[in-house]
Amino acid sequence: MSQGFVKGVTWDPVGQFLATQSDDRTVKIWNTEDWSLVEEVKKPFERSPANTFFRRLSWSPDGSFIAASNAMNGPVFVAAIIDRYDWSTDISFVGHENTIQVAAFNPRIFFPPGAKKVRAKASCMLALGADDSSISIWRNTRNKPLLVVKDIFDRQILDLCWCVTCSSFTYKPS
Image 1: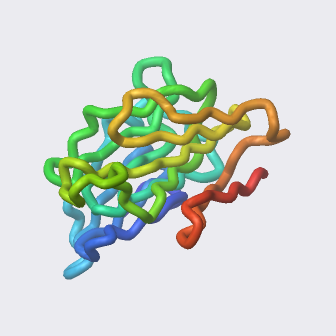
Image 2: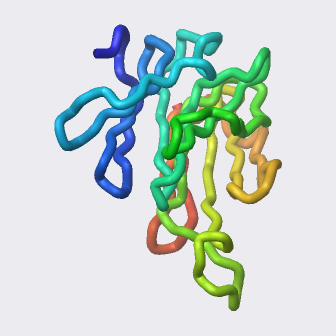
Image 3: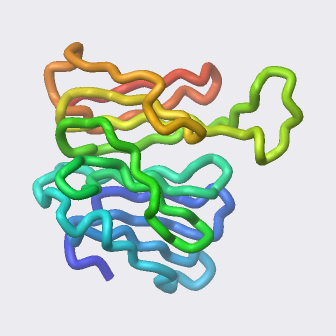
């Protein structure tokens, strides 16, 4: 059980797991067959701010990764990437000046034009929204954001979602 309010939930697109993120500074992975706790991820969240309104996490469309908000890498605000196969957190998306409240994967998998549709050529898009009133757009195959949108929102970003039919996204400022 969580020791704090659950502030984010994401379903595994394969249907095997449910991930929750809560005020107790953990991400918990639950098996949907018997609701047993499979893993509790703590490390990237140990020093994270406790005063976030949301902690929205997102599962990649292929089910390989979870992007979790409100993580820290030393003194830096990041989104932690949790690998489905061993629940490791070796990858972080860095680039916001304040707490990341929301992570949202695009539900589509992208391939280069004309490329064979194999796993090695696939890529995913991820949007992050933060308390610094900015949004960053990432591609999992790059180590820096494709786009950072700053200075157009008056308040922190509390939620994001992608439009499935048009591959764009919408935002919800506080």
